[in-house]
Amino acid sequence: MANSYTTLWTNGLCRELERLGRTGQRLTMLFGGPHQSLPSFLRAGVQPGDRIYPVRANRTCLYVLGALEVAQIVPYENAGSALPDDDYVKLLDWRPLKTGCVTEVLIGPPGAPLRFDTVVPGDLLERLTYTSRRGERLLKHVEDGRLIRSTSLQGIYRLAADSAAEIDQLVRGDGPSGVADDV
Image (cartoon, rainbow, N blue to C red):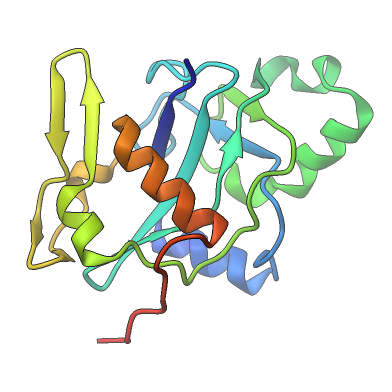
């Protein structure tokens, strides 16, 4: 059974992607590495068939930015020779996502369009659940439907099935979504 994960993107990266006109483009790859600033998808247990949801924490809101279904995970040092020419071009195209020490490349078919305005509603934020070998846990630092701190999102974490389904609805536009007021 496929799993779903979130990975936290910085506000700086999101602003850069917006500046470069990436809004509406479909994700085709993500990068992982050994550091907290670019965590390892392999170490988190991600496998082909899993879905990755990049998220952003900004001004007490959590935004879900898009989705990528993983088709292949390639060591970065082998990417040039392991990828077909079309995928290698995508590797170069998504270079802004490649920060720090990259050790792995996740490749997939075009995912959900990249958006920066899909807010996770407060009621979902309060019940957003992650799972691991130790059990399930709610997202920490949520008060009155607002995200007070993003520390429990830093890394790559597996969503519980119900939370993954609700996040997927948001990404596809089937659920409530909106733009948060700039507070």
